[in-house]
Amino acid sequence: MAKGSGLGVRGWLLLGLTTVVALAATGVWNPFPGMWDWVNRRSPISEPDVLWQQRIGGTPRSVTIAAETVVVEQRTRVEARSLATGSQLWERKADWSAVAGGGAEAVVVVGRLLVKGYEVLDPTTGVTRRRSDDTVAVWTYRNLLLDARCTEATDCTLSAWEPRGTTPLWTAFLPGVSTGLLADNPNLLDSRRLTSARIHAEVAGPEAVPPLLGFPVDGRVHVVDTATGRVLQDVEPGRDERLAVIGGRLLRIAARSQDGNCYFTISGQDAATGQQTWQRAGLNLRTADSAGCVQREDPYGARNVLVGVAPDGREAVLDGYDGRLLLSTEDGERVLAVDDRYAVVRTADRGGVAGRELGSGQVRWNRPSGEKAGAALTPYAAVVADEKPNRLVALDPRTGRELVALRTSANALAVGPAGMVVGEGREIGYVRFGTTGGSTGPDPTGGVPGPAGTGGVPAPQDACGPKNELCATPDSGK
Image 1: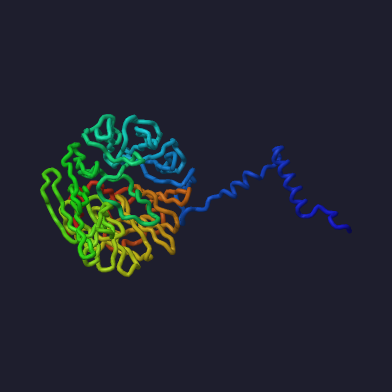
Image 2: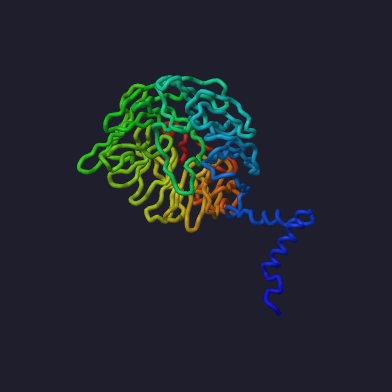
C-alpha cells in the first residue's frame, strides 16, 4: 500500500471539527456552551463551602458589608451584591468608594479622581441620596461623614453629616486640608493599624468617629471636636516631636538621639486647655526610623489605644486617654491585633495565639497556630489566618468560641454581624457564622457563652468611650 493514501490523524481531526462546526451552525447540535461552562467551572473557594461564591470583574481593592449588601470597590467601578445570594444589585463607574454608617443607616460614597465632589448612594438600590459638587475630601465613619470644601488653598470648610442626613450637623473653618490624590479618607494624625497577611486592612469596616480628630495643615495640627465642630487647638510640633490625636487627647511624641539610640517620651494633653494630663518615658511607638530618630510614621494602635515596645523589649498596650498600661506581654510574645477591649497575642513559642483582655491582662482563650499566623479584631469577631495548612477562623473575641472555621487559602475581606466575606483573586464568597462544624465546639475557656448578638455573635461595641468605660464586662476585673 502506498504511503499517505489515508487521511491520517490530523485529517480525521480536521474532518471532525468541520462536522461539529457545521452542526452548530445549523442548530442541530452545539457542544460549545457546555464545553465553555466546563472550562469556566469555579472551584469552591473554601471547605466547607461558602453560602455563595461569585466571580467579579476585577481584583477588589476593598470589600465592605453594608446593611444587607456587600459593596465591592474595584479599580474603576464599584458594585453592590446581595448579602443573601451574591447576585449583583447595581454597578457604577467610580475611581474611589467608601462606606459610611452602619446597619440600616449605611450608605456608599463614590467619586472620581482629581474631580471635586461625591455622591451618597443607597447600598441596596444604588440610587443617589445626596450629591456634592465642590468637596475635595471625604472621611467616612460608622456614625458620621465628614467632607471638606476649599474656596482657596488656605480657606476650607469642614462639615459633618449623619450618613443619611441632608443638612450638615456643624461646619468648621480650617486653613487648608491635606488630600493627596484620593478623595476618600485622606491621612489624619492618628494611629495606624497592625496588619496581617491574608486579612484585609479594612476588614472591620468603618469605625465610630473618635471624639477628636487631628488635621495636618502646613506642618501644623488642627484639633477638631467631632461633637461640636469646634477647633480646639492649632499646634506646631517641636523639632523632635510628632503629634497624634488618639483617645480624646493630643499626644506629643518626642524622640531624642543619644549614644546611637533613640529615647522616647510620650505626653498626653487636654486639647481644650492645653494642660498635660499624663507622661510616660521609654516606650518606643515605632514612629521613628534608625536615621537620626526622625519620626515619619504614626504610632501603631487602634481606636483609643497605642502599641509600643518597652525598654526591655516587651510589647505594651497603652491607653491614649490617661496613659495607663493596659497590657504588658511576656518575653517573646508579640501583639498581632488590638482594639479597646482585647489584644490577640502570638505566644512566645510561636505555636499559638491567645486572646488577652486589656486592663486586667487576663487570658481569655488560647488556640494552637502556625508561627506565621496573623490576626485582626473587628466589632463582631476576632479573625485568625493561618498557613501550612491554610485556615481562616472567626472567633468570639471574649471566649475564643469558633464562629466559623474554613480550610482555605483565600483572604478575609470583610466581617459583618452574621458572617464573613472571603476572596481569592476575582472570586469572593460569603459564609455565615455558625454554619461550619467548628462553630459548635467547646468554649476554649470553659466559661459561659459570650454576650448575645446576631446568630450567637457578641454584639458590637463601637463606642467604648475614651477610657473604655462603656465596654467593661462584669468579670473584667476593672
